[in-house]
Image (tube, rainbow, N blue to C red; front, side, top):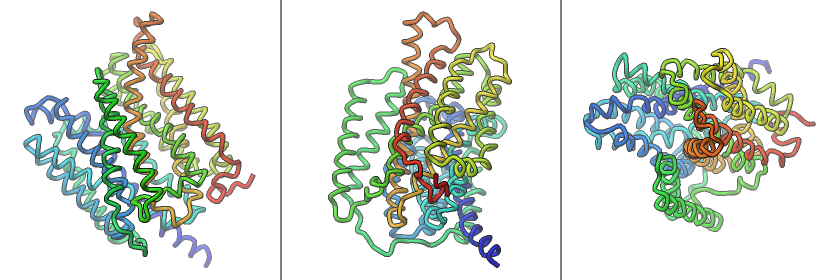
Length: 473
């Protein structure tokens, strides 16, 4: 009898987790496949690919603005209603993106898509977190994290395949059957949870946070340009940090803030917000740097470069079943330190690659890198919520989602900065004749960023997250 009850309890949280993970995958994949289709889309719209990049920027900025408000919206109107609405908005916007014939219509539909995406990810995660018992949290988080690891790897080659053998329109149309199925399932299995306390909307906090997020995201995008305009970019960054500091001060003093910051007092959550953000930034740089290393540095064609990248994807997936036993065996502190060091080594190994490196060796390095990043990503994401009280889960989820969104942009920016630093160091050390040296040195830079992010893990107690890992010593 107890076994049957346990089985029903497990299905009660595993079904929503699988649905939410599938929705995440649709959203993350949509954001990555578009990059390879930009030249074809630009040709149809009669603009350059650089000009059409505004469609990507508009989407990211919409995410940055609305994610901080997602927790309040879910608490007020219910997770099931908002998650289902987010799926509907995202699916409908996908249809209109595929039907767009002019740039301004496409950009407007990408903004609408961003509205759906901004609500889909954090609200879906919140629904899972609130219904998952602590002892099953590792499994639930492992299910939720795979889309963020897999989509950036398979997105570009998939986008190229769809564009070549169908048309760029199908990058968006493919979301329609997936979205409709997800909407039907959402109405059936997503729990209808909401806060009993009805907080008024914190308009002041929303405005200042929106300005902060837009400024920071735009500044990071500009810093990633080949020749950034330094002073305007620094001014944007200063405005963003200024508004962010003001928002933090406001959230601490307001009677009913949009986001409560109490979760930052939880040591394990605080570590994943600070050091964990640097780690998330470092792994976000990898899908950006590897294709450049292979195609620009080593002269590979996109097809063979994409085949090599699949090794990262295989590493991400094959280690998933072992992640939970590893966390239970080592505990969070030892796992994050040991595996974090291995992750740094895998990044440094990428700096040693050359055009003469055997294919099997390249694939082994990428496979192991995928393994280590998957373990670390799951560990950090699970530890974030391991010790957070149920009453603070919504605000913690909002903070985590906001930090994660910024980390993605920061990772690409750091990758671009690493390439420029690699060019300068290569010139200084007279290494410019070495193929792909600037890209290889950028992996050293990213590895150092990842190493700095590990410092926070040293402050964790040996029993950190023990209610989840069930490791007492």
